[in-house]
View 1 (tube, rainbow, N blue to C red):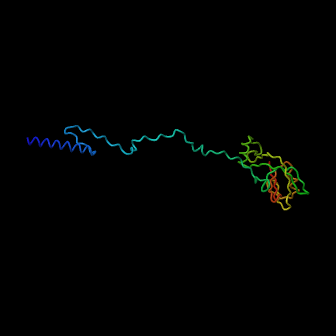
View 2 (view 1 turned 180 degrees about the vertical axis):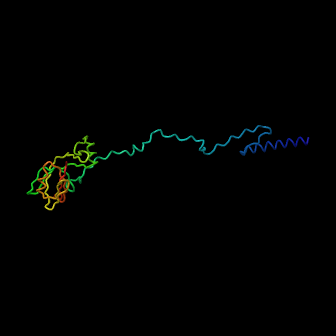
View 3 (view 1 turned 45 degrees about the vertical axis):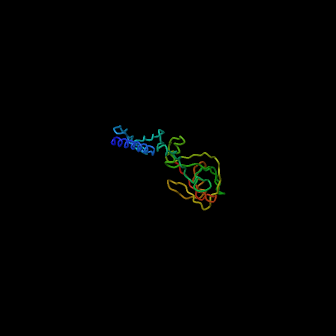
Length: 200
């Protein structure tokens, strides 16, 4: 009888302890022989790089380097200063007056060598005799006439049998006819150098 009371007391105390633990939020001990459910693996805080799907690649094509660097081909460059007020000019001689040393001219765009070939290609002009389009070429998009005085100390030259020859203005205007191409330098609104453009 004493042994039975002891067992009863132990069981009651065990039930009381178990209930107290459950109320305290602690996990109650599993009954002896009960199957313990497997613990689910804890999820990682951040997915591993191997598990994460790769970022989708953009399907839009990138511009090719050739397209990005493509530029418009440079146009042929005419000889001379490009400014009618000063520097070297190319023109067609229209008229002249030796007594007043004044000449009237029509400026043109003049091209030499490779620039002449390029300018002819731009204008759709084919090479012709006497190196036309191969050694020289001219454009005349502006028919405005201008008049300037040739300075008394100007350097004036003509081509004589393949050699430059210095002459006076009257001789120059005798040798170089109207409608011939001339080259000259302008400084302070006067012509300080004047050359014949010899064409075969």
